[in-house]
Image (tube, rainbow, N blue to C red; front, side, top):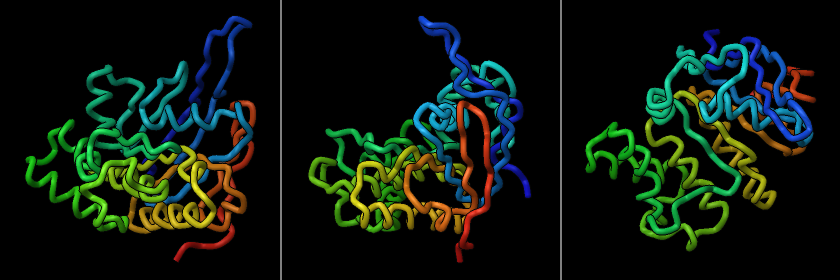
Length: 233
């Protein structure tokens, strides 16, 4: 299986008032196309650092991070920003939708920023994506007019705007009730079945029943990489 995400000896440290803090320590990890992977661990274990490195939002202090065939730790800032816009879709816990734009405009925004489609085609793709996540009827509304679950569906649609091979979801269900959380997890599983690589930081219990793999971190190190309990079908 070809790795979409590959970390080799990836480390990230920060200087603090009390000394150097090692958020990630020499991590080796490979994730293939179409895998739905949960990253779990206690607060401070390195989960967010890991996904920030994979998403190109942070850089390793040592080692290599390769995503979709590109060694992103070697890219300059402008090249990294362009790469990120086309290669990675990010879903946040608190949605991060722009409050003054309609839902359709929020979804189309990444396309406009990367100029991957003409304006008319961008609007059409936004409409298609909103239909795909089940909220086509909310396209003209502002984010504040939607429920939390609807906003997260819109955020998933936005993450897919440029058809990236990789979707990063950082606590995507942390702000949702249990029923809505299950629906969002179902959407993410559907993306993996369609061939996307999905890496999700989560505190959801019994997550092993829903994903292909559970990667467990502790103190910045990989302590377990286990297969999910039930195959997705």
